[in-house]
Amino acid sequence: MLATGNHDKVRELMALLDGTAVVAAPDGFDPDETGTTLVQNARIKADALRPDAPADAYVMADDSGLFVHALDGRPGVHSSRYGGPGATYADNCDLLLRELGDGDQRGAAFGCVLYCIAPDGAVMVAGGVLPGEITREAVGTDGFGYDPVFRPLSDDRTLAQMTRDEKAAISHRGRAARGMSRLLGLP
Image: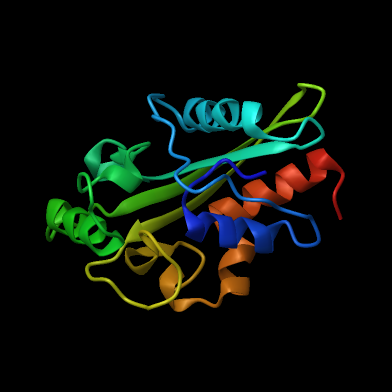
């Protein structure tokens, strides 16, 4: 079971964990993420879903964020709530671009942590990082979140200009999912 209410993350993780039966958290699942790190917030979500999961289920939570060097790591663990309550993906991207302005310091990194609780209570944690930079304008229509304003160092396109398979091969979440797959003994 995936401990998230973000349907975009559910879709992406289902594809990344290809061949594994995945059930999303019930509608309305939205625990209060009070942690100061990705690991803490992922644990909060997994712990919140564990009591509602079948005893034989593995409960996995994702927490990810965009860490912008010129903004002292912001938005970081607050990435999804960066623009305030009700902010859309576009609102968050616009706020980020306004805060960076015309500055040349645009280095950033996406980070992702997957936290999994096995039926026997064992915990597995896997992470992934994707270094890059923030573009000066939003470009591309695929993906979600900050994908239109994030260009990986390994490419000249934003994540929103890549196919899902291209993004999965290099993304922070793809790297974390491959690590978790190894820990779980998945193909």
